[in-house]
Amino acid sequence: MKRVFSSYYFIFFVAMAATQPFLSLYLHDRGISSEHIGFILACGNGAGILIQPLLGHLNDVVQDSRRLLFFSAVLSPIVFAGYAISSNTLVLVCVAVLFAVVQSSAPLADAMAVHEAKRSSFTYGQVRLWGALSFALTTMVAGYVYHLAGISWAFGIYALFSILLATISLKLPKSSASRRSSDAFWTGLWNVSKNARLLVFIVICFFVASALTVNATYLPLYFQALHHPMALVGLNFTVAAFTEVPLFYLSGRWMERFGKMPILVLATATLAVKYAVMAMNPPTAVILSIQVLEGIGYALYWSAAVQVVSDLAPSERSGTAQTLYAAIASSLSGIVGTSVGGLLFAQFGPLLTYAIMASSVLVALAGFIAFARFGMRQAW
Image (cartoon, rainbow, N blue to C red; front, side, top):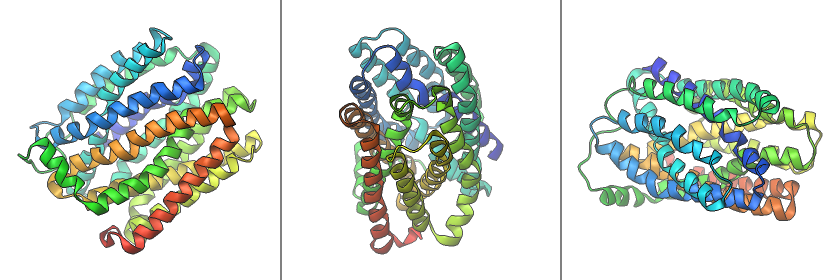
């Protein structure tokens, strides 16, 4: 199972790395403004908020959770191809919404991996690191390929690796990530939502995830606006992702030794420093070098946050809790990150945008420190 989950994450993030970091640049090159790009992607994240808790519930009650991941892998490239059909904003909004719906099962893989890791004596970070490695390798190549041959190649690459992902998903464990529950969907969601400490934790994560979304979406436009070499855009994601690989591997050991909340504090502090430096318009070489901080911050934040959500959730509702976390801390933050980030970028430019991102992460830093002191002691 460790090899199967490692393979799943590896292929999943090849497909993601070949498309998501370059989507805003693709749409911008087709004449779509940053405000409209933000609106389009925000609508997709809004759809994710609505569908993710439902899929989490389905994961907790269906007999074979692999089906959700399989159909997601099959349908995703079909829907994603819709971005090439038209430059009409309404059409692209529909594509973004449908793509978010078919991609909303992604957090279920995390819930399954956390559950299986406890049963099979490996850590979540040990399998998730393969996603970071594949993301690093893919962005390193994709940036140069798209610069030379055109970004339209992304659609074929995404389709190819989605087929591989669908095949691997059938080899995942048949059982879902948690014990079966016969509760109605809204009853289960209500039971999870009544966990005040879980909701507080998710709200704090929202501020980190919003900044991460802005960076992932608008970094190519940052390079373009400040006249950095566009051929090096992919290298930014490569440096960050290569840094994530050892950090994902070590995160489990560090959490056992130091606790989950101290790791989250370290992660947010690292991200705040990185975004503050980006707001100072450093040279290209400095920008590339500080992507190491992005990799450190993201890997430690993601590993610890997923584990804390698992700790806070009732065991029979781990899938619902993970997708509720994804709906608020990822999809809702995606709406804010893409829409507000696009407006800030258009109105105030890239430097002030990154200054606001640093402030958002500092808010989360204060929140995690307070949560570590007054919140859930099990997270230590």
